[in-house]
Image: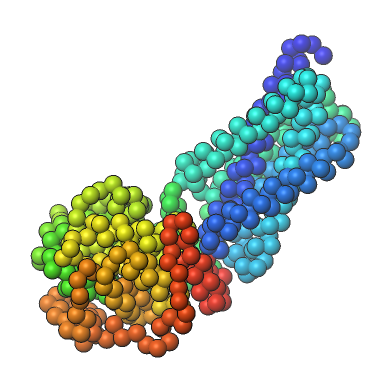
Amino acid sequence: MTKRQAQQEKLVLIISIFIAGLCSIVYELLISTTSSYFLGDSIRQFSITIGVYMAAMGLGSFVSRLAKGNLLLRFIEVELLLGLIGGCSVPLLYFCFAYTNPTAFSALMITLISLIGLLTGLEIPLLARILKDYYPIEINLSNVLSLDYLGALLATLLFPFLLLPLVGVFHSSLLFGLVNVGLGIFNLLFLRKQLPEKGIRRYHLFSVLCVAFFIGLFFLSSAMLARWNDRLFRDRIIYTETTPYQTLVLTEGKGDLRLYIDRVIQFSSTDEYRYHESLVHLAMERSRRKANVLILGGGEGLAAREVLKHPEVEKVTIVDIDPAVFALGKEQKRIQVLNKGSLDNEKVLSIPEDAFVFLQQYPEIYDVIIADLPDPSNEALARLYSRDFFKLVRKRLSPSGVFVTQASSPFHTKMAYWCIAANIQAAGFKYIHPYHAYVPSFGDWGFILASPFPIDTANWQLDIETQFLDPATARSLFQMEKDLLPSESVDTSTLDKPVLLDYFLADWRRWSRDNIPLQ
């Protein structure tokens, strides 16, 4: 072997180490994210993934001592298998979720993580043994580990900033399956002189079949995703988009327009007025001033539509983390009709920002603050119902103002509902008033009204146009039936100890009977 050939071979192996580390971490991120989308509780999904993956890597490293024969060929076998399994991981999870049940999904998830971890654990020892002919042992190990970790770093940067928002989990899985198989082909071609001639054609054939398989899946992916989505949504999908924050789906059937975020319904056009009238007007009626209103969430403009019915309103600020939700409310004609063009109203200011960050950074004081946020189904959302968050809300609320938040179902998620109430009280709101309304698409839905001054919940004057609320109905909403009251004390949820998430997930698991995510 000439010196030039040796340099080329070392370069090929160094590139292989880097790409191998990159692909393996991407697979784990894809599986964790997919499981979080479908099953909820992202802390649990990522914890399981990391734990099982690391254990399987350890097993793979142990088993690597059994590798005999041509070690470069063993490494190529590992890369081809890793590409096939990792590339198919997300499609398999989608299929399993659509056609089986959460138990089977979890079993498949753990199996895939274990196989990927096992194969990844084989990679580093094999490469270290292959490179021993080129470098002393201390340099050899440092090269292999540092390049592998550098590939892992790049994976963690690519995933949230490029792959997830621009490519999506399904296509990213196929893409990196191709990259991993391509790594095997790369080694087959450039290191062929170190490989045995006998039987090498079958590796080429397997590689070509894998590439053809993934290319075929790319072409069929739109039809496959549409078919699986049809099993998850009862009506025809008219719009879908995966953003850096979530997956948005609009469906329409029999005149009913529905928005789903991460497969959880956000509104139905047939009854959303019940929810939004209940959320908005009681706080607006009881606030002593209404000039400056803040809406946290509600980027589709439906809560703003109700706020703008009050002539005293001078400014409405809507803070929603996802610019795509604002775009839906402004550009989708069906939603424009529903929100009556509220997002284009000159009084309305739309700010794409996280609600927690906004309250920390913007010192403006508001007469009414309305929290129209998703349920606390993961740690990122649970913090928006924590005692710490409500303390920020109180700081931004005028002494003559009123705060109201949606608080999930007091029937289906009773403990979570009363935990939210406890958090608001612990944040320093002197007066809190739980209430609930029946919204057919959601069921019995809960809200909590809070203020620094006493509020009369028995006498109401509603001088605005409504479909659901009237004075008698408003009064009845504050009647909490016996079975909705807490049967035990609840803990306060903080950023450091988000017990609300545990309450919410435990409540929903008692009621969930179908293949639905807890988000």
